[in-house]
Image (tube, rainbow, N blue to C red; front, side, top):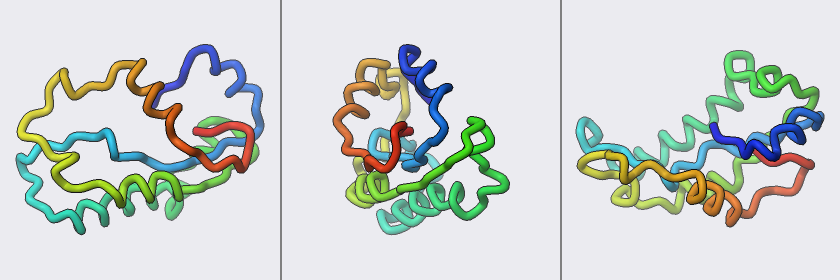
Length: 122
């Protein structure tokens, strides 16, 4: 998880949080042990995101961040994850070159179109 330090105080003061899911579009997986199809990859990406919704007692983000209101909207990451091709995420080796720098991460996230349902996007 990453949070800009300048926004941390704002995050602590707000009452609600929006869970938008896990975006795998910048992820890399090694080919070692992963002989799966694109359909299986999409299935698992969806199921991993649904864990948070389906088992909220175990994965209680609202309580973890001590927020009275928790909303969910997976529409953005679902669209991004479905558009991935298996060759986009598979690589022979994962190395330091595959780690995103803070600036790259911030630039990528700032270009995404998040739902505007509440004041804080996560």
